[in-house]
Image (cartoon, rainbow, N blue to C red; front, top):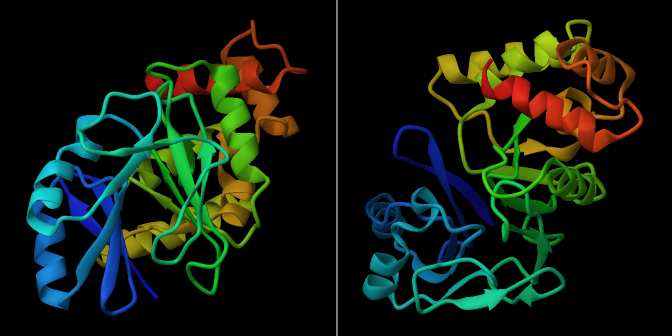
Length: 257
């Protein structure tokens, strides 16, 4: 099974998983890059997975369906291009590499979902849209900090070797912020060097793994003493005993960083 991030727009990734014959794609904001890869690799599109309703994640869905006939699955309570099969936490989608477990992860949008498979590759795979980024998390456009905290906690409970397939190449800017939060985090410093080397060669920094994120991502570390101290220093109203309050302070700080 092969996992490819297809670049789209300025910093999006459309994830494509294939076995040499069949393929699935995740959050196709544009159809053209996907169709190009399908043609180049002589793949048949088996299905489309959608994590949330933002245009840079759904803009190519209808064109792909019209061209390939592939069905699509997406969050139950968001406005999406039709036709689409609606799914929510606890559901499964039986597609290539599946079954794919649907996880409700509101915060970035109110109905955001993620897709997880324990068997898609030699390592488990997570398609998390804009909920979790490498070194960061999505902006709270529709949800609350408490929802995002709960969503990240759900993802943190998945196996540590899970491949984290985020939808944007935000890693370097996220890690620079993370270093301000945790300047003494040596794993973070090493990971930033690693990611900078990848980008200097034109390579994606993704996928990451949950094990890496738990070590370097401040939004996954809202219970860590240094992260709590930094959040309180930035916002004196931060309640150190409440991880969601720490996350809220971090997210507000990152918004203006």
